[in-house]
Length: 289
Image 1 (cartoon, one colour):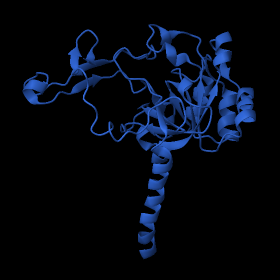
Image 2: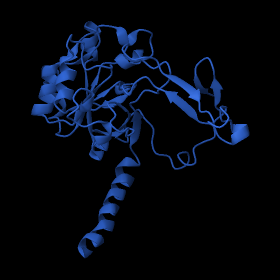
Image 3: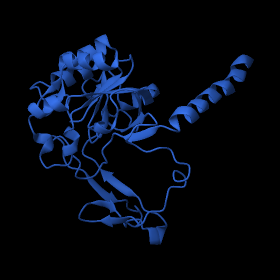
Image 4: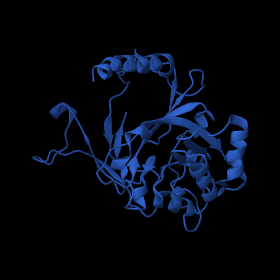
């Protein structure tokens, strides 16, 4: 027991040194969409609504001038909304729900495979095994336990009316999914659309979730991360028994990468004062500056 106690500070110092040497200088790229009432969502779910939070005693909204603070009430039609971590319990109750996902999902190696050129020729193109092998020929074998993002640039159309109802969208084929999980043993993959593929029976999503695998959906800004050499930070709320996870995916990229922001002790805390204050916009249904 004494040896374990004495070893703890040394381990902590190693992690702190790693932060100072790598993470403090790294660039951070946000891979998540901002949630708003107009967020793209599958047509099988209803719309969402944001409203000022009300004082239950008076029925009136809290106000900065009167109460010293304000808050928001969210009426969400589903937990399958926006950028999300899709737990296997979404399709199979015998596997973990979102609150049962291990904390070890928080930090993993990240790589990105692009199918942008294929999608330009075929909007319904899905990642294939040869695409994966071509990536490995150039960058090396995919690490076990890593996260594989599939870039299609579909997310650049996020927010367009009717986008979620379009029958053709880029995806990931079942053979590619099986190769990634059974041959390369990745942790999970991520894609930009709200479904894994546009096959009639959703073959890829069905196989994944019914067999205990997780996936990231509705991912954004994959054009801003390198093909290899980055890390992925994943955070999500722990809704009890939740079948979807509103997620914040952040890519940690090398210090010399051209996109992203760095840690800045001068502006990170306290955060800078904004040029205009937030106020409620009734037409948009959320606060704006």
